[in-house]
Length: 235
Length: 123
Image (cartoon, rainbow over all chains, first blue to last red; front, side, top):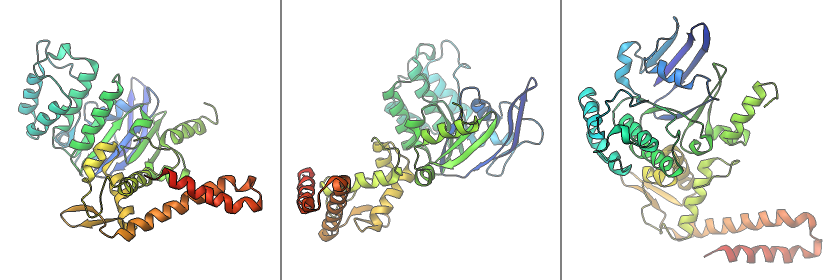
């Protein structure tokens, strides 16, 4: 379970997040939506403990807050920390060493499923392959919360399908998953809820089936409508 | 799987599963694939698949056996009832679409036509 309470974040006097509060229970996958620059990545980095929120902001996973939170979540947003000569197998070895909760068997299955070449140098991987590797590394850890930041960015339709299928197949059943994306239509059938940000605020937190059932709208239609309404009717 | 925008996804998955049973892809008395496998195949959440299966359990088309999974009913009348329901639904839908342009004396003919049209779509 992921609880965020009164989360404020200001960076060089710019207010990025203004008092976000939400709770995502376990066994739930949530889409994090919002236009570019709205603070989706910032929110993930705050949850992951990579940056510090303003005082009086609370982030809790399974009732725990502070530094120990890091062992309860999995977030791999970049491979820029690797060396030029590192190969895929080296990165897997780093993870095995660094994380006691790293599930090697799962990683093996994912490498096979995504057809990742373990002997390849990281520097030589295509954008699509990097995304696949990031996803595989992220979901190969056994944690409560998984944060996936734009896992379909710059990735072709077949790779997107593979990534979606890996999430459905290998994510632990009771996991709490937050996935940011601009591919609203494609992610809709995959997620339980949508968390919509605008201007650093939480515009809505709704279940996708609820949106369809009560509003008769697809997630993308609902998202667009909310944004336009919030703009006072302007697109 | 492509989803229409105005209907809950679990109902669309339920309809798809029903179709598989009607067409005999999943045969009477046989086990249907596991929830996670269906989720991966259809690229929908496991919760959605479970909700869809619950629908079919409710209308008697699918039976859940504890610890074994989900099975298509062995009762052929259940399947034929669903088939008949579908026939009525589709006929009604067709008639709804044309009734406002039809003359009263054409209606029996329309009904017959709707049924024939439905039969055509069946394997």
